[in-house]
Image (cartoon, rainbow, N blue to C red):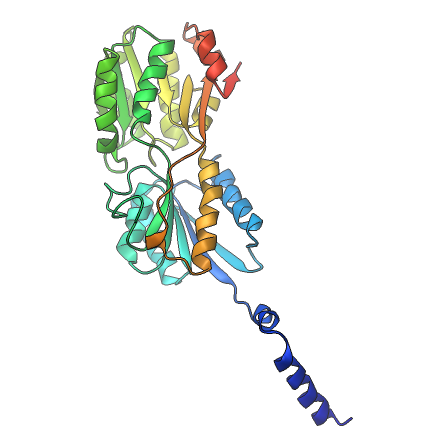
Length: 331
C-alpha cells in the first residue's frame, strides 16, 4: 500500500471513532484561579489547598492533567489581594476559587463574568456578593464559614469555663471583618449571659496590647476573637494568646489551629471541609452550571477544641460536661 493511501485510510479511521472518544483526545486543560487570604507559609494554608485538590481528584479533575490551578497567596495584605485578583482575572481562567471576604470583594471589582466560588465568607448577602443565599443571581456563589448565631455560642462556652466574666473584648479588624454581621448575635447573647460586649477594633499587632490594657489584672474580663483575614495571621492570634495567657484572661477563638497553638478554646467550622466541598461547585460549573443558580451552602462540620494545658496555666477548671462535648482536648 502506498504511503498516501495509508494516510488517507488512517484519517478516515480517525473520523469514524465514536464522538466521545474523539472529544477525549482533544480535551483542553481547564484553568482555575485560586486566591487565598493566607500567606503560603501559614500552617493552615497548605491543608486548605490540599483539601480542595482532594475534592477535585475525587471528581476526576487532576492538577497538571485536565486542570491547571493557578494559586496565589495574599498574606492578609489588602493591596496584594487587589493586585493578585487583577492578575488572576487577566489570565482569563474558567473560574476562580477565593477565600475570605476581602478577597472576594477584590475579585468582584475585577470581573462580573468569570465564575467565582467563595470559601470562608461569613456574610455574602450583606457584603453584596449575592442577592440571596438560595438564588445568588450573579457570577458568585460558594460556602459560608460561620452563621451569626455562632457568636452566641462563643459567649456561652466562655462563660461555662469562666463564670466570673462580665466584660468581653470582641477583637476584629474593621477593614477586613464583617463585624456588623456578628453584632446582631453577640449583643443579645452577651446580655442574656450578663456580659458587656466591648467592640475592640485592631489594625495592627501593636494595637492589640493597647486595646487590652483595661483587662490587665482584672478577674472579670474575657476575649472573643472574630473570624477574619487579619485575626487569622499567626502573629495576630499568637499575640492575643500570649497576652491572654500572661494576664489570665479567658479567650475563645474561631478555629482549631488557634487552640492548638495555645489558645484556651476554639469553636468554629472545619474550613478544610469547606474547601473540599467547594470542589463540587467547581465541578458543576466546569460542566456548564451557572453560579447564579447554585445556592450558597452553609457549614455542616463544626469543631470544639479545649486546651486543658492552657486552662491549668490560667487556673481554670474545665467542667467535665464541656470536655465530653469537645472534639479534641489538648492535655
